[in-house]
Length: 428
Image 1 (cartoon, rainbow, N blue to C red):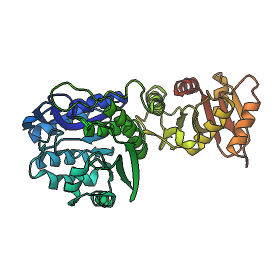
Image 2: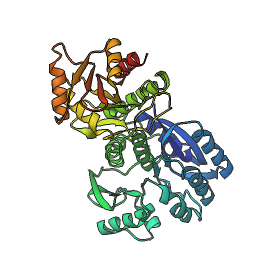
Image 3: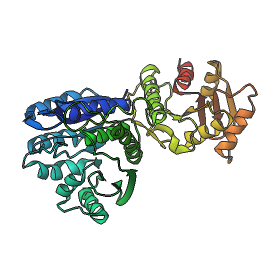
Image 4: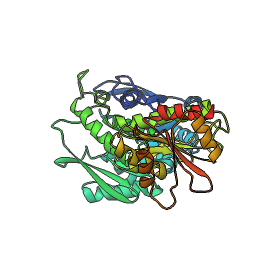
């Protein structure tokens, strides 16, 4: 299971903050590590007291988590003070993982959740290292230093907030339009995300839950746009199923995504690749594939390379964990898998490596069926079709192109575990 980190305050009523973040990330299939920045006494009607955690303790929590866990994405929520912002920024600026900043300033019940020095520190220290900032209307007005009355104001505020390079998701729930329009500013372009306005106000924790969904999806390897779109679908359901536990505002249902697990196939593909990569790095002998290899896995019904994930830079046995798998990372293997799936949709995985002809003999000695082809100037599709046609009983275990100075091999299988078992036979 992949891990994300929430750096936020504790909500005693359990509807927002750390408590909501843990539930929301779990509903996307991600483990939530936590760093608590403040303890609040609050319920569904009011915040009665806030006690910030000393910056030294925030630092100790960050050190404990980041030194041990493979954190794939981080979100910040309530940070309260400039000192805590500085501590978090110092700890995260050298970690190359997506940072999603929810610039929490006011609770749903109206209480301020920051001190006077907070905003300047947020703008100067945290926004420049953020991948995405998710303000509501009020927070965007503070960060941009302007009033937001209409769509033109919203788009201009996004440009101001994102001037340091981060993407911006300005949430439209506090606007007065008939529909809710969220403004996603990415790469100097505005994307409008429209949803029907519900006939009741958003409940307690909506901003925390949405940013946690986005963080969890990014931890699972989805890109920013896909993470935002999937998360926006989930928060709509969370709002539709919010519930009351007290005498004030209702609680947003952070666990609404669990029954249907949106985008589950895409996350499952990345998790299966993670497990295979760990097996290749730890179980196969060092040097068993001298130049390393790469492994790719497709979603069911993949339409193209954008639905097939692999590793940037490949994997070297015995060399530790590779970079994260991502969609669209390995074009060659993607085309091989896409062609194989046309003949048999269950063949969704392939590993690719270079070797010499003696190594091909070793593969055959290990009991693998290997189709030898000479690609020359033919396409990948023609090569794969030829290899398949030679095996009336089904797919070969591997296709070896022996037309060049070195042999290019694709090991085919149903899933990463199937391919890993074949690689293990070769390396023994």
